[in-house]
Length: 283
Ligand code: PAF
Image (cartoon, rainbow, N blue to C red; front, side, top):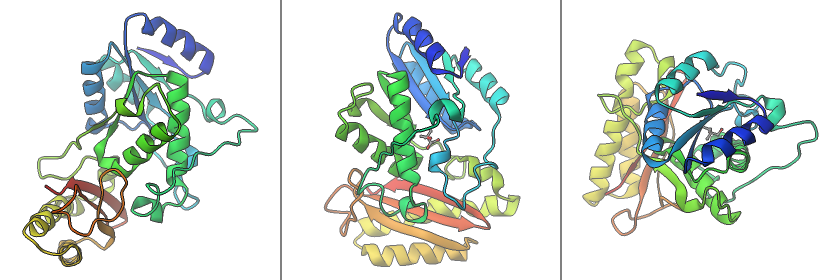
């Protein structure tokens, strides 16, 4: 596996790989876990070469979010990617991504609002902007993202569609189902912040979501199901629930009756100082 940190060598390396066939991109911010490696394995099934990017994107961190504290473990990540058969690691310096004078922002209206967008103003602008740049830099045939960050995936798909991107085309932006621990908790770098007690309590999140989904499919109103979900999480040790909402999977518009139209349940809840998110289909 080759690691490149500047654009010119990236282009040369990509030209050489493209001779063999299709390229799949897996964008990441590093600190890789099993969820990322699942994306890489899926990408390997679908393309001749897998390119992984590692870039801790300053533009998607809010003023109150600690960019400097974000884990950076390049040597460990390189070893993991090498073992997975990744062909190329694109690990640009911030200066290569946002050189002096950089002035462009991509804002995807509607899908960026509410849910995680409400608590993190500007976050999805930062994501859309960096992902558009990564797409233009690598020009992959397909790109893979985890469904755990469903709103992010919806924002990226909307951006690719609206900007007529072709590499990858919006239809080649693939969501990979959330990888879960044995007790159902969605894998996340943030799980490492939980104490053993909090980690045990955190499993209540996917279970309470499943119960709410079953209740709504049985005819309970969204409002009542969300109230019971919040009560169940609070009783299980969660300190607060940032949101618990039922939305359309593509537009992310609120859904009143999930039995009539496609819908997904989205939850963000805090346990101690750690904010966990999850989403599940209502079907
Ligand atoms: O999901 C992430 O790790 C990041 O938001 C992404 C898509 C790599 C953009 O920085």
